[in-house]
Image 1 (cartoon, rainbow, N blue to C red):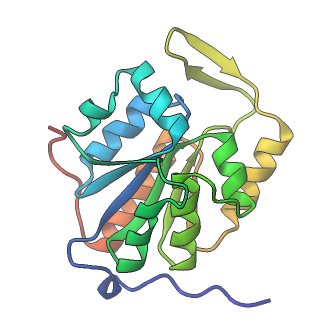
Image 2: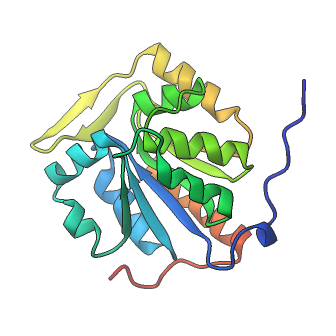
Length: 199
């Protein structure tokens, strides 16, 4: 079997390269994920169509997001914005939160949304990816727009998370703490620091 290519060196990215943060159609830890994105230096948001539908249910309209980020929407069949990965404009791709659907697609090489396309192309460019998978425990308490509910993921969800975790240049976060730790490590690798203010 072919050995994975090493991750891209820092000097292969543009000096002002950024985080490409993808939002899918999950409300699980959505507010907390956006809060982490706001603490990072240099973040652009990439929304799936489902993500764009779900975000306003949690108070995040595209207009409000644009107060904090440059926002790319999933409105082209070929995911045109993905091309920026090839220009060294993004040093890291983050999918947070990632639905079980997105995790399954990434784990099986399907790239038919803006986030899954970004993840796939990042892998082909040896750009590190961080995926915050929602369905990682036998019982998950998650917030819907109206209430807290219990979700019991199926065996297939766990299998897909495990499969994705074996991919080169991929870190799978199974909790918000894992996500923050993975981002902290990536910042350290990049010799960057958290923003002191998210305003």
